[in-house]
Length: 397
Image (tube, rainbow, N blue to C red; front, side, top):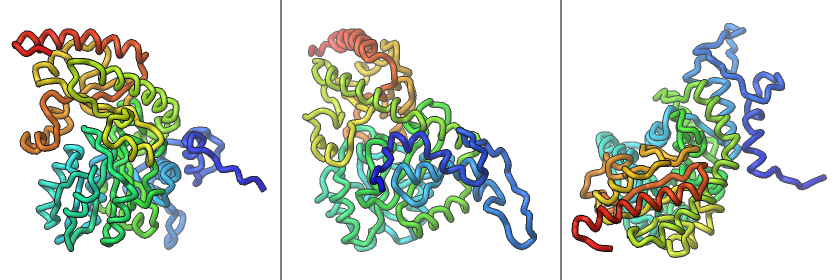
């Protein structure tokens, strides 16, 4: 008997049709079941679907797909990434405590600092690039360690295996936001993480056309508990968007590979430019998390951040690049440039941003599928203008 195991690149293409198991039609695309309710053949014995908040065949195929790709047993699709994250937090109870990475997406920061305290759930932020700092933040009531790696927006790297060991020794859960890496390049469940979360709006969808969130568990019982929360809150992904996300996932490999290759070239270019004060990208050997990231991930990804001297210099750069869109979000086929202080992390007070290195000169860049030489040439001319702007105010590089 052959011991051949299907590659993840193949599973990305075929998993969704395996997930569409209720009706065998031979269709290469999962049908869109635009129905809110389902007829029951029996008075006493209901079928697998009754009401689309509780389950829909299109969403079910998507959920089975992401579970397979992440190596989990249960996948769940939500109306947005923050819906998936906040629903997972609802597994906690009053009196519980969270240790969370200080370099975290602004929406997660807002939920943890402004919503959860109203329900008696406490938190402590820690430097997740330092396992000892995480351990020091643990309390007797800590029930969850929440990870982003690479983190948003400064691309900090957390040693997943070390944190899992810490969590298990303290009998608490681990959640990991895998948006930046996707299951293609990082498999947190295989490293012992309890719940993997995604803003599927980003690389998994890849076309900036839907809002979606995903969660995956390895443990079946934990998956049932999260499914109960999903059904209770009702923040589910609709059938049309579930279909679109399935289609996006099918092209993840070719899209992400090309974007990641371009990101490496752009990071190298920026790292050698006089105006750029710092480049945050785990593909650079100078990155403090370089070795840890290579140990647990198979690519540096396609997102990088870089620091210009101040807000006016960043403004001059943004207003003179021609190719990238200047917008929130990331992970699309188009390159997306953003200013975290005013966009993804606007919910975080300036004092907290400053502690985390999210300066007014910090820009985040999600590399798309444009020709990389065109992108570098565009950056070159915009940086030249920004340099003149910088010199104009009397500060010379």
